[in-house]
Structure formats: C-alpha cells, structure tokens
Amino acid sequence: MQFGTTPTSTDNAVALFRDLGLPAEAVTSNLSALAAVDAKYLRDLKININNSLTAATLSSKEAYLLAVAIMVNEKNSLLQDAFSRLAEGAGATDKEIAEVISCASLMAANNVYYRFRHFMHEDFYNNAQAGIRMSIMVNPVIGKEFFELVSIAVSAVNGCEMCVTSHEKNLVQHGTDKQRIHDAVRLAAVLRSLSVLV
Image (cartoon, rainbow, N blue to C red; front, side):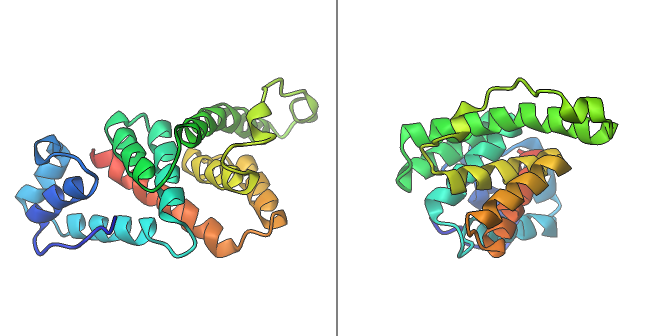
C-alpha cells in the first residue's frame, strides 16, 4: 500500500485513516482538533509515516509487522488491528503476527528488568540470574535477524539502553546494515507519534 498525499490538513486526517483501512468516522478527537485548524503537522505526520513504512531496507511485510509490535507495545488496539490487516495483505502469516506480538510482550519485561540493572550499576544485580524465559528467541518463526530488529525497535521506544545496545550488536553480527537498523527505529518512533494521536 502506498500512502499518498493530499492537499489539505483536513483531508490528511481522513486520508490517513483511509490508508490504514479505517473508516473516516473513526478519526479521533486529537486528529479532528488538528484538522479543524488545518494544522500543518498532519501533512508532516502523513509524510513521516509514508517515508518510514516505505523505507528501501524494509519489505512491506516487515514494516507492517514492526508496526504491529509497536502498537502492541503502545496498547493501541485500533492501530494494531489495522496494521495486522496490512501485514496479512503483504503476506504475513498468523504465526508471524503472533510472534511479533509475543516479541513486544517479551521486550516489555526485558526493558524494565535490564533498565533497572543499568540504573543500579551494582554487581549484585548485574550478576543475578534474570530468570526470565526467552525460548521464543531461540528459533523464531520470523527469523533471528528480524526478531532482533523488532526487539531493538520496541526497546528503543521503551528507552532501555542495555537492550538497545545488545540488540544492535547482535544485528551487526548477523550482518545487518546499519541503515536497516536506523530505518526500523525511525519507523518505531514515527508510529509512536501516530499512536499518541489515535
């Protein structure tokens, strides 16, 4: 799906929802408030979303699966459902969608736990067994490289430095180009800005 551009801010609020497969009636009060004053930001947001979802380093399926994970993390069921449908349309399976949902949930735990360890700067906590099962990371349906990419994107949104640096190191070891890592994190950042309004 190509996210197009429209001439006015009011049109952008409706067009944005149309591009996501959502009805115009579902436009939120935040988006309506911006549209009512023809806020330039709506056009910027639409361009940001388009540019992020169509990054050359991410396939459409990957971009939409990343979006699903971010919306799970943000607890935004409306956008999670919309991006799940787009992911399915781009060839994602139910197992792949379930796995990015699981990845977002696992990162919710890891980001809190490892951020705590980072904050404490204390050997006891750094050497303690985490005791958090992570078997999903051993042989993921979406592949280890993409699982790491989803993990770094969610971890960046959640602000866990230890997780971000660990996943970035693993991705580089997998041979992932740093532009692909950048594009995944940028997509996560832009989608978080969308979730704030929806």
